[in-house]
Every structure is written in C-alpha cells, then in structure tokens.
Image 1: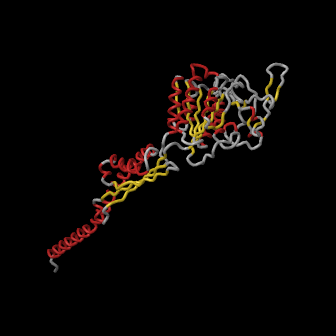
Image 2: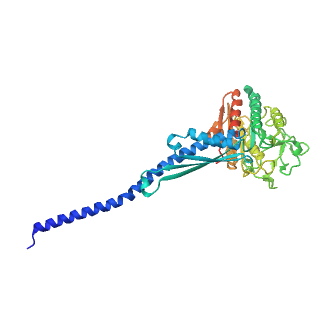
Length: 425
C-alpha cells in the first residue's frame, strides 16, 4: 500500500520547487519592468524640463526682439545664452546645453533653438543614460503690417459732454502712436469712417460703377411729389445696400441689388458730415480728416461697420487694401458709438432704439469677424452694451467709457496693443 505520509512529503517538496520557479521568473521579469517604469518617470522629468525651457526661450525671444536694433548678431546671441542661464531654475539649468540663435534682419525675426539633456535614473538599466530635449521660439521686432479702420460715431449726441472734442484728440493720439511704430513706408495704414444713418463720400466718385441712382425723396404734403437722386444733385450720401448685401462686403457684381445706393442727405445724415477716407499712411491727411468730424444726425451702426470693412477689403468700392492672406498682415477695426441704433434705410424713426436695426448690426459684426478682422468696440456712456460686447472679437476688446476723458487712455491702450512686439510662432 502507498504510504500517505510519503505522498504528502512529496507534494510539499513539489510545491516548494514550484515556488522557487515563480520567484526566479519574477526576478527575471523585474529588470525590464523597472526599466519601463523608469522610462516613464524619466520621460515625465524630461517633459517638465522641456516646458520650463520653452517658457524661458519664449521670454528670451521677446527680449532679443526688443534689443535686436541695438546689438550686433554676436552680442545678441551671447545675450540670449546669458539670459537663459541666469533665468532657468536649477533643475533645468543643469540640463541646458546652449541655444542656437538665428537673426534675420531682412524679415526682422529672431529664431531660438534650445537643447538640453536630462540624465536618466532607473532607465539606465535599459542603457539610456540621458533624454534629449529641444524647443524653439521665434519673435519679430517692430510691427507686422497693419490695416486699421476707425469707424466713429458722428451723430448729434456726440456733441454732449465734450465727447466729440475728446474723440478727435483720442483719435489723433492713436494716429501718433501708429506713426511712431511704423518703421517703413505703408507698414501701417489707417482709414476713417464717420457715420450717422448714412456715410458721406467724395462727390468726385459720382461716376463709379458700383453706385446706383434710384433712391427717391418724396414731399410730406399734398400734392405728393417724388424726386429721384441724380449725379448733379448728389451731395455724397450713401445709404444701406439691399438686404442681405447691407451686412456684407460682397464685391458689387453689376446686379442692382449689389450696388451702393447714392441717396439724398437729410437731417438724419447731413451733407456736412465728415467724409469716409480710405486706407492711408499720410499722417497729416489723417489728422486733417479727423478734424472735419462734427456731431450731427442719427445712428445706424451697421452702415459704419460695413463701410469700415469696405476700406479693409481689396475689392470695390475701395481697392487700396491688401488681400487678407497677405503674410504678416493684420486687419483691425475700432468701432465707437455713444448711442442706440435708431434708423436705417427701412426701419426706425431716428430717435428711439430700433431692434430691427440692431439685428442688422449683429449680422454685420459676424461677417466682419469671419473675414479675419479683429474688432475692438467702445461704448461711450450710452448704447447697447450687449450688442457692442458681442461685436468685439474678444471680451477684452470691448471697452466701457463713462467719461469723455477716458477716450484718450483707451485709444492709447488699443494702439499700444496693436503695435507691440509679438511672438510669431
């Protein structure tokens, strides 16, 4: 008979042998497992070093752009490396192996590539002694090319509380800042678009093919008579295009609905209103045009915004703007008003808020921003705050002005933001 004690002792020995095999196998697997964990830990360390290095060279690139016009290429390279070594935290400084600096004085760019080597810890088990990290940044000095439309409320309410006087001074301050920032001819160009319920053009444009001549003025008393606008009687007023062209900058195609209606001037938009000026870098002419502004008429923000966009587009009625995809070109609009929409070609009585006119302004703002124009809006004391806030390209690009004296600081802040040195990638 089989000895039960013998079988039990045999099973125990077998179990002991199996345990030894598992332990041995686990020991063999432990080395690569530790290596994998070590790589993950070391990769995390390398990522942190890269992020720190990236932040540092972004700051160094801006510093280099600021000093590029004062230093030689070699001085600028030394300055970048010294700055990085001095400003990296200790755990990143030890891994920093130097930066390559490329200065292009034609394109006015400074490109920096920084490298580092992060020593590994546990990952050395797999034969990896260091992880290489690299990051790059580029900045430009001076300014990109800029096209800026000043779309300015010239309605009667701007006569109150010194608003028009302050607006003229603020607009001139902006022109001066942009003039000082410009480093080459036509690098920065500005248009001026005064508006009420209509805009006013130079009557020398009367033969332009994009104008139409079918608007009528009718008497208010019996017997009713109507007169059609003509080139000989035109004083420069232009009203809204047919819907939906009234909220877009679609180039006139020849079809009547796409053309701009020459119109009679009236109390809502008198002929004395300042005229639209297309993009120019003639700073003297810009200041002179701003001086012609005077408060008169009622409010149609839509037509001001759309004609501002027209000055920023290369198609008719103004053809001086560059295409939106021109490299290093930024297009901006500053839209200022001190009141509610009260009248356009179809709606409103010229004195009370018209939500129908507001609806056209909303569509115009959406179209302008979709064309790549960055829009700043300024509400001067009164007006539809929600409408203007939503028209701006970003929350920080909407300004509330509660006193005319605040206009100059606001315009200066916007001008500084537009013209400042920026990272280009």
